[in-house]
Length: 359
Ligand SMILES: [Mn+2]
Image (cartoon, rainbow, N blue to C red):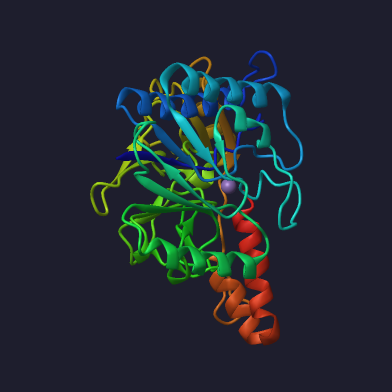
């Protein structure tokens, strides 16, 4: 049986590069809704009845934008009633209103039109209503309580290893996952081995926004945000995953075409750039001096969404041993701490990770 894995929709009226939309939904939010509709539409077209959503439906914590709430509700409702596509969803950190063990969360009322799982629970999914259970989905929503989560993951793995078709779905930060343009490797609260991917057919994760299969596994993956959100996501293909429980490690990444890409361009006189091919995407041109800036403005087609930024030039004067601007953040914090604050290395890395993943 085939299922879809998606996560981190982060519905929000993002201001950057937004055009005014209508009814409280700007163009950026419309693109997110478009991506969600594409995922559910794909399910319908390929006869896939179940979509696993691994958390972070809304971007803002503790608040909902009425128009976005209603729009995503209508979309899921439409596919549920009219096309028989059921979304099985767990809350992520952005959906929860606080860090308690059983927090209130944004989409609790979606239980009328979706399968909302807000606790550590195993649900049985059937390919047809009259039949027997085909797939067991072990749901581990985001809670800040690490011990509780680790205990539950252990218990889940012990139950799952005796079941033929089990899937773990969680919203969780796993060490070894990567994020951002430089594929910055994160050190996080959980290790891959603590999820015990060998006990499941598939492990479907939300939290990091770059779609990726976890290192050392062929069946555990972050779904990623289904479209690019900012220049950190530049070059990263976005979409969703399809998995088949009748096979082993049969995962397929499906890119969602047409969503806007973030593209930065180094402008210089010699650059060969097709100025007419700018439709739809979000551009950032870096320039040096007024001449270049004026040239860019004169070449820009009407309606193009672009920004110009002065080109940064780093002069690498190394003030500290083992630290320079071209290193990744993790290395900088670790090297600095080792030299000056050895006792603070762990807490420094923790804070850095919070900054990097709270996106
Ligand atoms: Mn997220």
